[in-house]
Image (cartoon, rainbow, N blue to C red; front, side, top):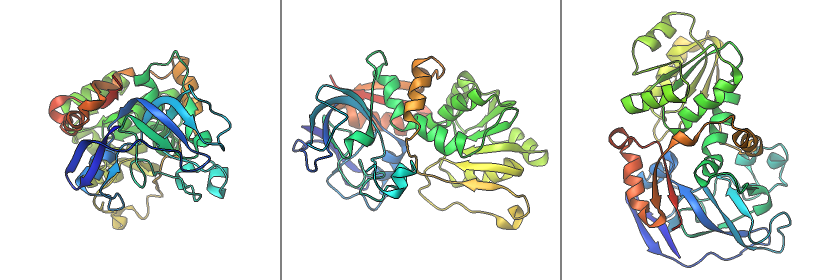
Amino acid sequence: MRALVYHGPAQTSWDTVPDPAIQDPTDAIVRIDATTVCGSDLHIRQGDFHEVRPGTVLGHEAVGEIVEVGSGVHRLRTGDQVIVSSVSACGSCGECRDAMYGQCRGGGGWILGSLINGTQAELVRVPFADHSTTRRPSSLPLDDAVLLAEVLPTAYEVGVRNGHVCPGDTVAVVGAGPVGLAAVIIARLYLPRRIIVVDLEGARLEAAVRAGADAAESPGKMIADLSEGPGADTVIEASGDPDGFLLCTRAVRAGGHIANIGTHGKPATLHLESLWRKNITISTGQVDTSSTPWLLELMTSGHLPVSPLVTHTFGLDGMEDAYEVFARGATTGALKVVLHRE
């Protein structure tokens, strides 16, 4: 099969590699119909994740068709259309029993495209397939379905839920990439008083307003007003940038919440000398994707208008072009790129 292979920092190529095979009874083999490039993939390609070994197939978000199952798979059969979760869950460890699949201690967690071969390929081996996939309704478009693999659960679980967004709140989102915009869309379901989005790129600020933000601008007056006034009840850090995190600490009100979504490739400074008496809560988190079935119901009922998040599509063999377009989002206008099997 063909797949995008990591060869070391700044080195990837679309190669011919062996087809995946069932290794454990709980495995399934999925033929990829759609996959994506994530901000975490860019960090991996840059060499920020040292646990990713050269020779690894990248990617951890996909939608596809089951083509083979192991003897220990009981909920799936050949031909099923599935959403492949970015997180693999053994389903039996204490963390999985508490629905903390991202912390799985039974061999799962975020392993696709990291510790094992991932989804940016024609085929992928999915461990713990019964617990790591969700059936896709035939009526749900591929481009919408693939957002349920990671983007939407991350925005909800790590951003909106961890940030305790409530009716009447002021919510600030720092970073208007795909996950930040998804956080805007989901936060609106909780009837906040207003949602403010901050980003450096004009095209993404325009996208934030289309997604439902009440105001969107580059760092400046809005952040100053929040820091000098009552502040935001919830601030969602979705940029992954140290300066973005600093903006969050300035914008949050006393007693408020900072929910960090962004993947940080370098340290962010925590100014406890100015924060120690504000009674704020800072949360971080690896997505669990336990919310995927609920988000799927919201999507199929029309309550999650997320289709505009996908701005560019490619064939699978356009993987390297997709990376470049996504990495240069400031000039290409790319939010989420999706690659389809041709």
